[in-house]
Length: 110
Image (tube, rainbow, N blue to C red; front, side, top):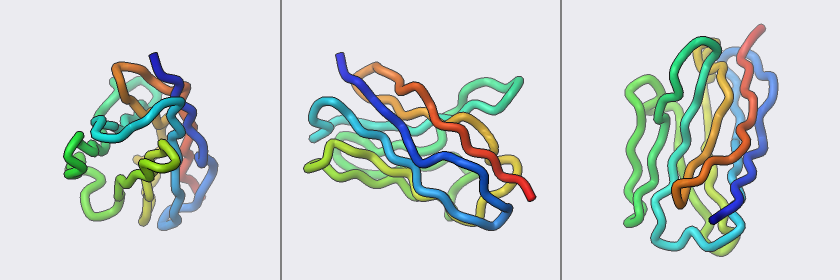
């Protein structure tokens, strides 16, 4: 079992940026880590994926705006979100070792 703690969410204006962090209680070396999000009334969707070989993939809706990265020494995964849009408003979750974090709220609004 692993504990995952997300942070970095908040309120930002359209066009702004946020960086989310997901700190894991054990090593994420060679482990796939993913960011998901869930907007009110919608299903949870995969946003970004960092595979066990560290290649990245993204949902079409965030491609070119979001970047997933990791620090293996800090057991932390990041999601850099730029050019944010109101439709990016959601609770963002990270997932690793079949565990979920508690989520962090991102609200994009003027």
